[in-house]
Image 1 (tube, helix red, strand yellow):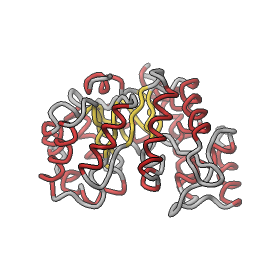
Image 2 (cartoon, rainbow, N blue to C red):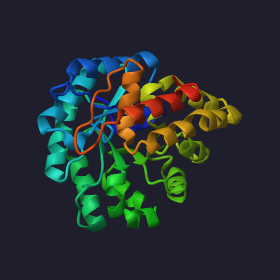
Image 3 (cartoon, rainbow, N blue to C red):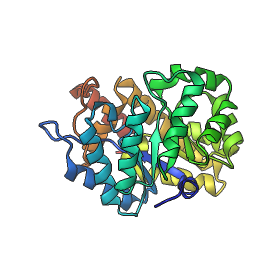
Length: 309
């Protein structure tokens, strides 16, 4: 079992948040999830997140969430670090799913603040402290778009993150920031770099900035389909070739994100591109929408023009 400190050390470079593939009759497609996991192993990705926001966890039943986590952990078989998304609206439910992830071999868990509410900052600290007391796994705290309105006080006062980390008594290994707030991201990278692995989740351009301030890892959707581009970008940064890293951002990352966002269904765009590249993609579960035929054609055309397809 990986300790929280060992997980922190593992959180480097590109991290892929996996999608969840469904069969035509809307069941979790275990074989497809195995194929997708193996693809990331073969491509050289070191860390994946299973059953997270990109994996549509909010539309999965408890049994389906467990199935996704178990399938990815068993298929990875120690060849990648697997972080299981175990966020639930309540602390007890989160602990139960976290304990299951620990049982089936997850290396860590990713947990958003309770997305309905949590009784202020004191309640949020207690939430993570109680989870930490119930598991040996490292925790990645995730401020997702769905909870941004509930963590405004922390975005305005980044030093509160130190209190949150201390409340969990050494169990917080990582922090995933999707705020888009450069001041906050920069501040937590500098403030937490010796305690927590801070990852940005708004494209490689977001990480291009935070890398200068000690952020060790990043997460973008482009890596779901073309991991090699992200690995090339990371290698350029690590070697000090910032010109090459910036060129990849300008020529690939930013146009890709723009094309996906233009569809109005970012996750639907990721799944459509997976399918277009012969990988398991499948349909979205409601309330999320699949892309129309025209949206798919426009998206694929955009990716062809920037040399991704």
